[in-house]
Amino acid sequence: MAKKVFEIEMKVRDYECDTQGIVNNANYLHYTEVTRHEFMESLGVSFYECHEAGIDPVVARADLHYKTSLKGSDLFLSSLMVEKKGAKLIFHQTIRRKTDNAVCCNAHIEVAILVNGKLSRGDYFDEKMKDYL
Image 1 (cartoon, rainbow, N blue to C red):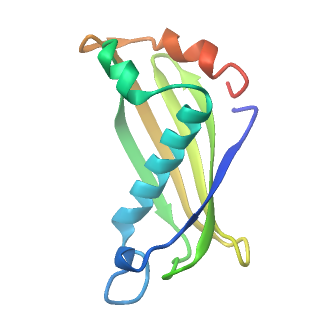
Image 2: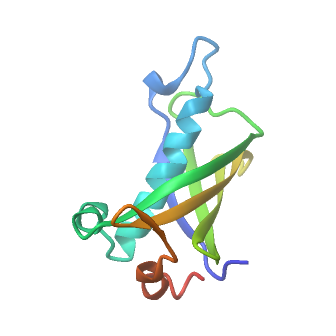
């Protein structure tokens, strides 16, 4: 399992809520993606530069478990741990409401690394993520 946790704070925007006044389920996938992108940027990884070099991390599988709903203007903490299994990066992500630390969503995201369009072992990310793997 992963060694270190990365975490960021975010806020629910009103337009992310459905007619029930809770965050629409699809937005949790957006939140997990923002967290992964912020994590990579904190490691000095630019997705644009990776793509220009022919390296593309792509989501191969996303499994989200919804626990408690977020509502408009809620502050929440989105965290992740990462591990490497073969050619995949596995992100274990949790979204918690800040006011009461309630778990709102747990996610398991599998990312495959393509190099010039072909599946790769993702060696480029090994050094970048060494403190987290």
